[in-house]
Image (cartoon, rainbow, N blue to C red):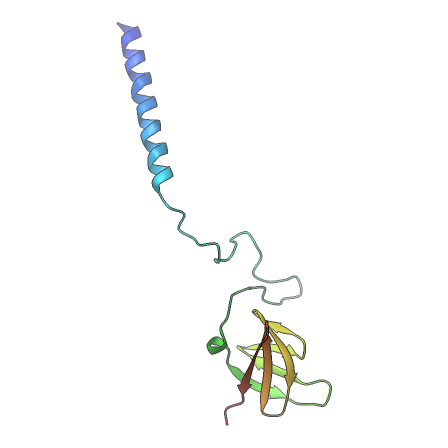
Length: 115
């Protein structure tokens, strides 16, 4: 009698585990391959943000320019960037008095300073 109970309990346990495993396989992974790796740090040891978000040109906002020949910097999305620096997938080609020229691949984008 005790043997039948143990076999029944064992079969019930195996069936429950199999049903749980099948349900887990059917559940889709909630994140896409473009989402941030949750194990990668958000800030470097020097204090810079390390978010590698894909930005499009409409998501970039030029907030200010500090213009000096050879040492100009631009403030884009609250981030201070020098010439040849990067923001997202964009590289800063040049910083002028009223605009910043960015490049992504073969395309150039111009961010103008709003007055």
